[in-house]
Image 1 (cartoon, rainbow, N blue to C red):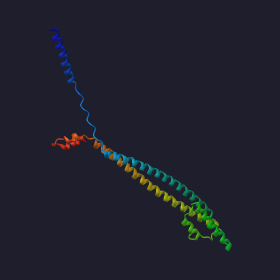
Image 2 (image 1 turned 90 degrees about the vertical axis):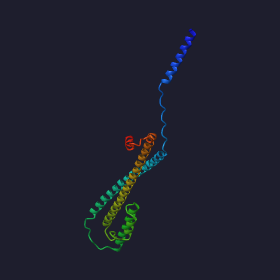
Image 3 (image 1 turned 135 degrees about the vertical axis):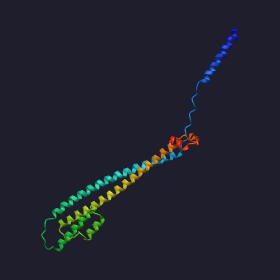
Image 4 (image 1 turned 45 degrees about the vertical axis):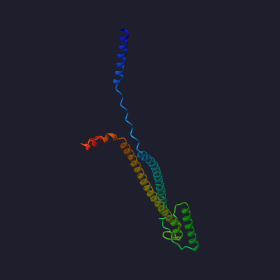
Length: 221
């Protein structure tokens, strides 16, 4: 009898242990992550490339700004020189008959000043040609002070044209930098959109009831 009771006790303990084991709640299986959308990777790569282009465009714009500042400084200096020489040339010069030798000397002086200014990039090639051809303000018969005033005025004109060209280049560089930045923002927004769409529970969306699909869609969003 004692042996039978012992066996029954062992069986009861085993049944109780098995019941307790099966009664323990199991963790639900973790849902598998949605497969990665290849479009996100493609757009992310395109966004990285666009960001690199945007950085280069911004660097170009900053360099263009520096060129504008330098061109304005050169124009400002040329303007001061032109005003100073013009003020000196304002004093009346006694008119007297010029000899051929004096006219030839003034002509050489004009050519020499204009050529030196062109070599120093103070005059353009077109302006040098005008000076050598004695057109416009380039009169070889004028006094050297008046010739210097005409030269300084031409240098100021050339510097101002260079400043305007630099300003236009800076404006174009800024527009290109803005377009590149807009492209980066657009691609990054596309990456976020694709990732959000890939992260939706497609299985749940397929189980929408046909009664109120619009309300269910609004609730999910």
